[in-house]
Image (cartoon, rainbow, N blue to C red):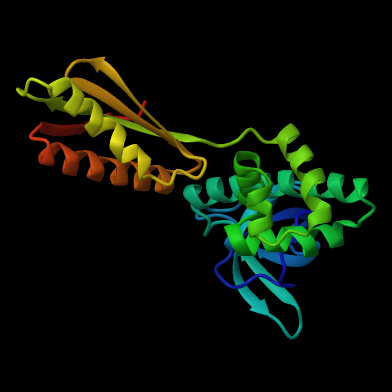
Length: 266
């Protein structure tokens, strides 16, 4: 069962629940991320349409995405709504849930391998990755892409690192994004070819790539494609900006005519 660190959800939170019992006036759910804690789905919160039979909308054993509308922390009561969840929230929650399930499975396998419990795995690894990367699975994806450095940065203990990396590489394909564009450089100088080459290559020497790839190649003089591959768009955009800033500055210094056109992502 996927876990959350707090015992009860907050009002407005979108959660995953499994229908336990359906009655004429509502349904009882177990909140899958909160240790199976019970929540009540009132008849009036089933649908925006007229509800003739609640069983037309929910059935026992069904997993549903609902929004928390009331929480009594003293008594432990939680009320939820099905009708207040919009399609976008539902899609996002299902994706988040699936990623959390995959993350837990990896933690569970590695924990058994090194003689630890799943509770140990969450405490020593899971919550550290969540604190550092915002999500456990995002941390595991980063480890698939960057290796042990990504785990050490988050404070994962040494005994977990190699077993985790082995399991991560079996289960997660490193996530990469790619952005690219066309640089146009022209020169009327006798040594124009050398100036263009210097303009394209020299800025690379100053870039700190840290696992990001940057390729520059001709697509037919005077047009050159620059392509950045990184673990996320924010990093890719940062590297692209720094490289283009260096190219533009050097082009101006060497008397080249410079322009850049972004290519649309396919």
